Image (cartoon, rainbow, N blue to C red; front, side, top):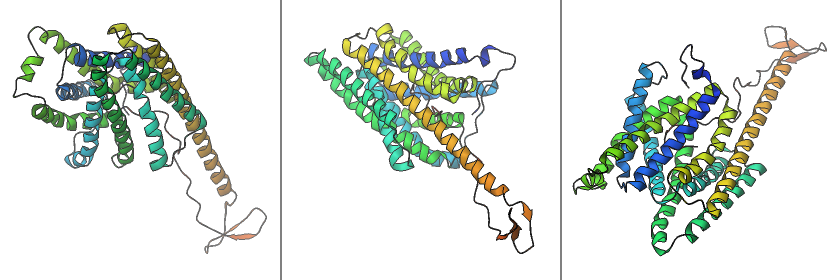
Length: 385
C-alpha cells in the first residue's frame, strides 16, 4: 500500500491530522450523498455513482502525478478477471444509495452494522474463521441497536411516512447481503491478483464507471426528460456542488484510510473505524435535521458500543494469532538447531547424545505471520467504515 509521504512535512506524518482527515471525509461523503438523494429529490442514483467513480479515477491520476500514491496500469487480462468483482461493487453501492435515499443517516448507519454479522459468519463458512464470545456480545448489541432504531423510526411515522420507509428497509436488507457478498467474494479472489489498496480502488472505479453510466442512460429516464427535471435551473448550481463534494469525498476516504494506517497503526485504524460511526450517525441530526428521538440516540449509543466491542475482539484475535504463529516459528527453529553436525553423504547426522539419526526434510517453517490482518482495506472508497 502506498500512502502519502510528502517529504519535509510534519503535517503529512501527523497521526492526529490523518485521523481527522479520514473521519471528516467519511462524514462529508455521507452528508453530501444524503443531501443529494433526499434534499434535492435526486432519483438518478446510477448517475451519481458514475460521477463518483469518474471523480475517483481523475483524482487517482492527479495524486499519482504528484507522487503521493502509486498504482498499476490497467491490464486487459486482469481487468477481465476482476470485472465480476466490480459488478459486485456496483450492486453494493447502488443498494446502499437507495437505502440512504429513504432512511435517515442515524438509522442507515445503525443498520449498516448488520453487514458485519453476515461477513463474520460468511468467513466462518468459507475461510474457517472463528466467532469469539466478545464478537457474539457485539452482534447482540448490533441487533439490539437496530431494533431500537427501527422501532423508533417506524413508530414516529404516520401512514404516509411508512410508505417511504418500507422501500428504505427493503434496500437496506438487500444492501447488507450484497455488501457481505462483495467483501467475501473479493477476499476470496484478491489473492490471485496481488493488488495493493490503490490498485483495487483504480480497477474498481474504472471498470464500474461504464457499467453505471450505461445503467443510468438505460434505466433512469434520460430519453423522457428526467435529467432536465433533475437538474432544474433553480437547483442546478447547488446540486452540482453537492455532487462534486460527494465525488471528492468518496476518493478521500480511500486516501485517508491509507494515510491513517501509515501514520498510526492497524490497531489504531481499526478503533478509529469503530469510533467514527458515532459522528457519522450524529451528522444527520446535526446537519440535516434528522430527529434526535430516544430510539435514534440509544440506537447510536448501542451501535457505538457494538463497534468498539467488535473492533477489540478482532484486534485481540489477530494478536493471539500473531503470537501463536511466532511461537510455532520459534519451535521449528529450535528443533532444527538440535541437529547441526553434518554426517556422512548418505543422509545421517550426529545428535546431541552421540546417536546417529536419520536426516529428514525439515518441516515447512512459515516465513510470514498467519495472523488475521488488523486493517482491512476500503477498496471501493464509497462506504465509510
